[in-house]
Image (cartoon, rainbow, N blue to C red; front, side):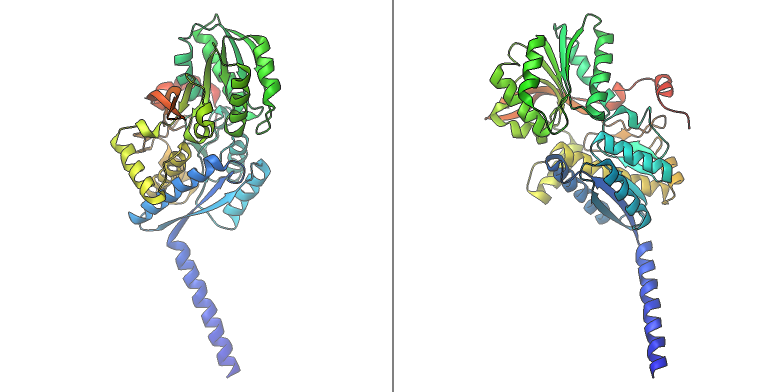
Length: 400
């Protein structure tokens, strides 16, 4: 009796094991990493965006009949924690690819991990040019328009300003340093008469806005480039308004037109800044209308730019997995290079030469509407129109 019981138990274990194996084969897992606890204003809408995408992908039959599953981890804004999370997702969860990240230094850390471990990585948000150029690798692709692309869009408008004396304010880490460097380069090429009279580098998330505003005012610029975002932006605007920093001065600002950064400013929103952003309330295209209706129906809320990024990251991942019909990293790379797909902003393509997508951005000006900050006079700029030539990219990116 005891022997039969043990045999039965062994058979049960075997059956459970077989079921687990079958279950594993019936789904495809993506490992997603982001700074949820550090930057909730962006990452919470981002999470909603990718949750909507997962729902839509599975409702349409999954990935070649297999259910798409996203396993998400919080990196807490620390590159080392992001690499630990990536290692756990690959070794313990057996994910088909990695996706996500927000801060540029974290994106670079996960990209380096992906390159060393030969794991496919779809970077969602990190904007540093290094991720696809100087530190680019065959395993890493990037969705969002880079610092170079957004700088080129902003410079197109900034170069029309009469201002010759410029100051810059940016967070002192990879993203801020990269954004300032490329803006200065492109602006100086278009306007050799420009003088750069001051640079302020507050620590990310810890700006002491009073001294920063005072130092910029002392340099007496005619225009300011701002790269701060989130809580730092709110503090800078408040202090700048109080001290009159922005009066009679032009301001050009990365990201400020994104609802997650514009909304907290409320009636303190400075008017007339030239910005990149996401005026969801003014976009009238079939692709965006479809996304907007689905998002509002599911969450009873309006989307932020993070919503678009999260949504399109998973839509892109699904398209890549479906085309490759495999989880082999080399086949995923081959499937992604040159792959085109729809997005809420229109068709985008992942370029073969540098693994950068051609997703664009909206450029416009800040304004007050009913006591709330909005973007006005916005125009969508296609990403493909703001990238350097293949020959230039070839010099910027290391050879495989």
